[in-house]
Image (cartoon, rainbow, N blue to C red; front, side, top):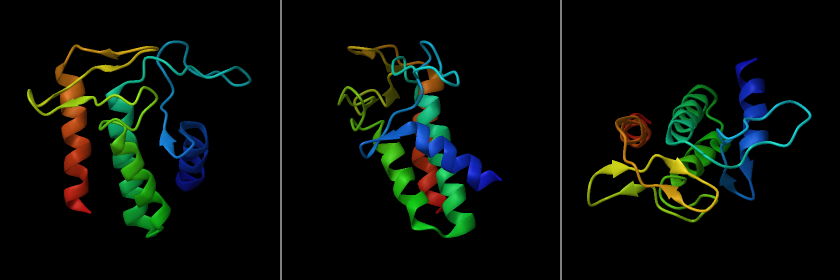
Length: 123
């Protein structure tokens, strides 16, 4: 059931080889168009962790591939082609809006990036 649920989530959050989490502006209700904007770093971090766990459990390389795609969301492989992790400050911007990134670097976003990055050290 967990893998079936994960595969469903993958079908909803990966488009054209890129991780595109459901945006917080409107969510995604069954039968309606999904929200694309106000994507949050916590979504990318949780997806990285979940996919790495699936890879470790099933040894299916597609989950490792998807985990790397998800992590690259932080590094500019996202809807706006904008890097969210700031090497100068060590912080992570708070998300992707429709036209720009949210320049706030809150603790939740920074911790999300760091947890996602550290997840690869255990695999």
